[in-house]
Amino acid sequence: MKTLFPIGWVRAGLLALAALVMSAAPAWADKYASIVIDMETGQVLHDRAADEPRHPASLTKVMTLYMVFDAIDQGKLKLSDRMTVSKAASRAQPSKLGLKSGTTIKVEDAIRALVTKSANDVAMVIAEKLAGTEAKFVVRMNAKAKELGMLHTTFRNASGLPDRKQLTTARDMARLGEAIYMDHKDRYNYFSLSSFTWNNRKHLNHNELLKSVEGVDGIKTGFTNASGYNLLASAERDGRRVMAVMMGGSTGKSRDRHVADLIDAAFLEMSGAPATDGDLRVRIAFGARGNASADDLALAQLRKLQDPDAALVSARDPALIAEFDDAGAFAEGESTEEDEAGFEVVAEGDSESDPIGDLIGTTDRADPAAFDPNAVASTPAPAALAPAETAIIVTSEVPAGVAPSAASLDQLALPVTQ
Image (cartoon, rainbow, N blue to C red; front, side, top):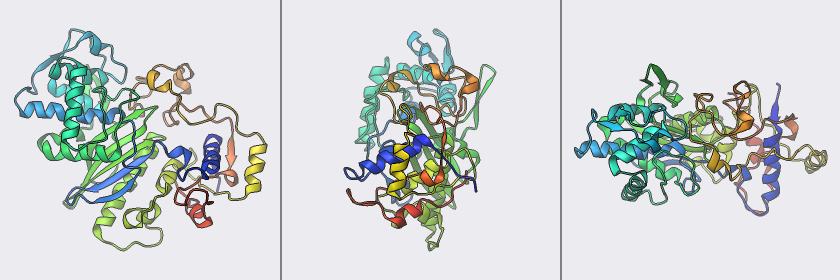
């Protein structure tokens, strides 16, 4: 079986191994977080770094929509109302509908545009309609967040566009998902829209799980360079509903597959079926079988490989590590870490479904033919591929200063396909 592993990720693994004596968390895990909740009982079925600060990206728009639904319920807004587009809104960064200053858009069309296209210009139009300015709307967003128990969330705009101080947690996003479902159940069906047409252009919903995972009926994707690929999703099977959040995925596809696994594992867990060897719940350290490791992240990141037959092979030989390091295989600039400037120049786009139309900002992706929608955000393509025997990935289930066990590394060496 052909096995390949990008050099950039090998380098990240080596750096994580070197840092293990100082921290039990791998270096590449600082964007990832996840949580799954049984909506009937409120039981947390799975969580990893669920209370660590993360950037929400377009998951922010779920709160914007919550505020819209509140205003409709209170009689302050009607679906048929038309909202005027300001000059500031028309200048919003992509993803956007391209609204012109002075034109109008109906409230219902705005809702559909946020759910499907994740349009930033529309988010600003809504904010200005409800509060006069986006800044005043943000004050209301944060007040509502506290009211809903989102105690570790700070919104800075209505869209999710990059801002260093716009932070949340996976647990807070799950609370928001639960709240909008419970408080606005009669409008929750907007989140299951497959598409939205505006000016004769059809915009597909970025939430691919709507058409690929049983029971999924919402709710929102998100992406910026700073956040990675985020997804807040809900599914119902046999009268039971779960809310799942993943933040910090390396690609849209790997994020989708991981959340699909989390949802499937959740329903297995709720069924009470005993776990067996190879059980999905065991493979992603789910529920009572969970631990403090990043095994689930490792498996999710693995699926980003281009080769569908690829598998991770762990290397535990110090001599091999030293040999690879001495060979100078890691060139400068191959790090997958985000540059601080990324917060300012990369716009929210959910761009995995429409990469060219919303592309902005960076010269290295100016050529559409060279753009890979499945590439890690702001990460240059590796100059070469490392053989599997040099691939190293580190779990965080061991205490600081203790080498990972052979068993824990072997667990990560299980074959994973696309």
